[in-house]
Amino acid sequence: MGRKYFGTDGIRGKVGEYPITPEFVLKLGWAAGRVLCKGHDGKGKVLIGKDTRVSGYMFESSLQAGLSAAGVDVLLSGPMPTPAVAYLTHTLHAQAGIVISASHNPYYDNGIKFFAADGTKLDDDIENAIEEELEKQLDTVESSKLGKAQRVEDAPGRYIEYCKSTVPRNLDLAGMKIVVDCAHGATYHVAGSVFRELGAEVIEIGNSPDGFNINAQCGALHPQLLKASVLELGADLGIALDGDGDRVMMVDHTGRVLDGDDILYVIARHRLLGKGLGRDKVVVGTLMSNLGFEQALAQHDVTLIRAQVGDRYVLESMKQSGLVLGGETSGHIICLDRTSTGDGIIAALQVLAALSGMSCSLNDISAEVSKYPQVMINVKADASVVQNASTKEAVVQAEADLGNKGRVLLRPSGTEPVVRVMVEGEDGRQVEHLAQQIADVISAHA
Image (cartoon, rainbow, N blue to C red; front, side):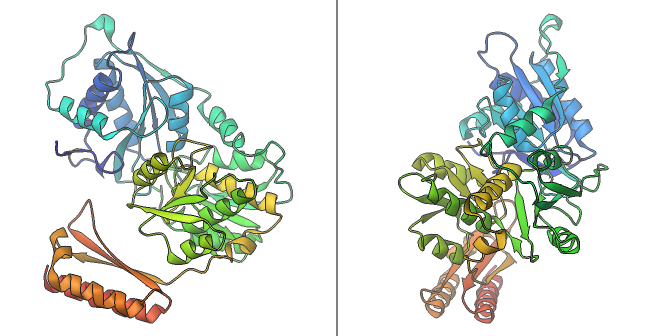
């Protein structure tokens, strides 16, 4: 069936515009409860977490009401990172976890994400079943079977201890000064504690959420604030998380901003020492992973597999091939031997463990990756233009100009009538020129 509501990462949109309305979210809670707790011996229970958006209060109440109407008990964690909800869903033996968040989007957007009982994202068939249930008339179970709600009082502490358990017990960050930017989001009350309890001197920024400042010129989406803070304070490095804590960017002591490719490389290099990549030495990236990153991995006989853009596709590829490390340039890093989903704090911890294990600075090891200039142009056009003869001819010509020292990628957006033109190569000016040439051809035939 065609998917009416679910995108690549739950349901997302502008608050107050359908389907991100209290009425719809109430029914979504009811439908999800009926599907996710079907056949469970007893009422079943679902954990609800949220980020720091002001609309989170409203949607938390709506979900709670819908789940209760379906006869499902509710556990409320309050503001918690998305990966923390995944972890707590599993450890609290809930049938599902729900996160109210629009991740890196501004405060006026929001969304609903789901996790299965084992802390992984829902399969497509489960999401389809929820959509089918949404088409039915909402009916409330009899009063004796209504679901109850209770707060999980120790949720932050549980998650902090879990994060620390993902690194060696002897990891000591004493003497290290770290700036942590929480993007005024869901990690504001946990991230600093994790690194501080491991011995680091921690300076926190972006840790004063007011419901409206989430991701506002800070965090993983805007690492310039972190860069300035690291340089001003003379810190060893900086860590920038996004609003719901599943993305991470880092800054070394020189102010160089490191994206997901750089972070993946550091973790992979360290794991090679202990055979932590597995026998096949393979890392999963995406179509957007930088060619320089791929070449740096190849220098150590590590193969890069490219999945579609989207952390769910990275995860699918990892599971299909039995791999443990993957991620996106945007900062979604998945360490499947540590957690079930992308986790910014845990990814940063793996980097810190790598620096300790290899006795080097973040700048030392990340300098091994020489990034290629990469240009992205968004062109308003229907996806079908990609198959146009003129478009194909322009791409072939650009690829010929680049030779084996670059790439061209056309990617229709899954959420808007836009075709993304990406060109990557050694010569920045040539890359810009070729990207604009292709974009002009697409515009002419849009």
